[in-house]
Amino acid sequence: MKARGVKLAFNCTGIRAEESPARKKKEPLKLNATLSKAGREVYEYMPIHHLTTRHVFWIIQQAGQEPFHANIRNKRLSCVFCIMGCDGDLQHGAEQRPALLQKYLDTEDRTGWTMFNGKSLRDRIANKPSGIAA
Image (tube, rainbow, N blue to C red; front, side):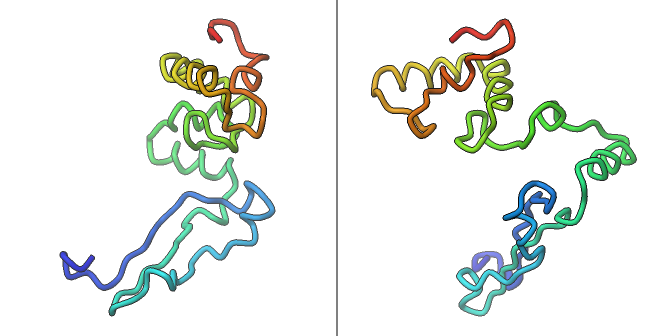
């Protein structure tokens, strides 16, 4: 911001109230006091906070666009193998990114550690659709 002479910024995210009780409590527009220093103002803004999933997909359709494939299938969209993803989301990630899946599985095997609170990624995708090699 300093290099560009910008004094006002908005960090926009696609968080929606419908996604969880914790997200419902979030303020859709809030000053980020940590980043608002040295003559600049930074706000956290959630422009679709109030929208339902159905409404979001309707808006995409009305714009003549198609949603990203993972938005259609996944419960929530995040990293491919997000620690907070449900099993179905992890299975979809495994289908879409088999080489990355193998890197994760190899790392878990090599280190004996998992990022899923004691349950391996292999276990999380155990009830996987056909075609996923674990």
